Length: 515
Image (cartoon, rainbow, N blue to C red; front, side):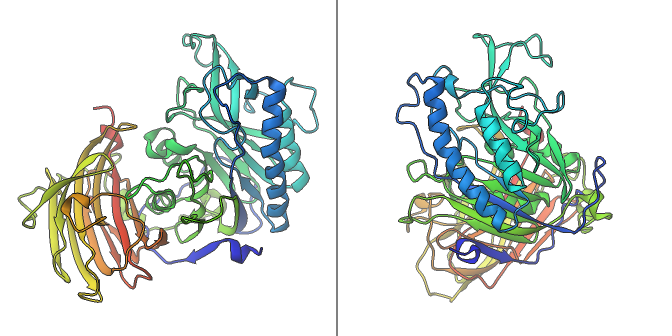
């Protein structure tokens, strides 16, 4: 199958308003302003009893079955000119291990900042490192940078945190490893924000890990749930890292946090490149990987009934490392930067200054109580407030009167507390699952009603992530995004290719997470 048949390449124009362009550490100059990236969505081969005891030999046999698939995909990526290849989180061993049952899968990954090691050419330097050796030789054989996720065992206490130690006397980390195109281990990142991962520890302090490449400059490393939190993700942005590697095992969560929906939203909102590799599992509702830049998206999202199989995505990507580009980009962001360091200094918009539309109601969306207002007319203007946070919508349904689908505008300002704790301000235009108001906020994947709209909110944060998702979970690039120094964010969109599932301005109030 050709690359064109395997991927969906959507090229767009957008006025992005976050500018994170500035110089970073020294690295070699690039020959071109583009490079070729690949991500692999992996249908992981699982062990039937992850919580049962497993010997090292049995664990290796299991991981080698997944590594064999990695090898095939690395060869395919190399044939298409890939210079960097990203594999997903948990792709070698799978999920649901206990702290003890994962022991056979653990390897001790040396810190590349402390020692230089090429596992492929120096296999005898460290014992029990068969997986590291295989990955290193894979990178070397196919002449590409390779990023994989694996289980890491570290001695306790750590040199960096001598006073902290798990009760069993060892650290077990969910770990990203990066190999240079000659097989050299160049980066190791321990996931900080765990998501129900009994087998692993969070490191005592968030790790801010980057690595440099000759073809694209600097990349930063995050894993799955990390993307929703300040550390390490926003810390990397503050350090002017504009190219992020994102192995993930993400369960789709509509209507706000579908995989490709938030992957693209983060790329747009943070003005970065995101290389996202997910697991493919129908049982766990996992699919959705992509290569995202502020002006393009190459992605895959399996549909119901699709074969449960892996998918390689390859795309030509512009270099966004500011040092290598020699100048700042997306200077429209200077307006946004005029706001404030962490939250907008202007007072929040009050309910009295925006007259809410009549007949508001409360309905749960992803376990949060949103205040909604229905879109009862073929076109109009509606407002809705949750406390002092207000959302504004101008809309026109197309064709007028062509569908009986129910739509609503929702607002939420508060702390999400189910399966994670994080503070939000959200404006969301959603298709309701049925014709009852209680269905607004439920999961929907299909829609017939197209809509031209302008969605706006005044946020107390500079970190607002925009998304438009249409029928059968297809992304559309917002026609225009604008931000103002007072925190107002506006998303305008028209000429939809399919019915609107959801359009969201997802604001993260990182500075309120601990309150």
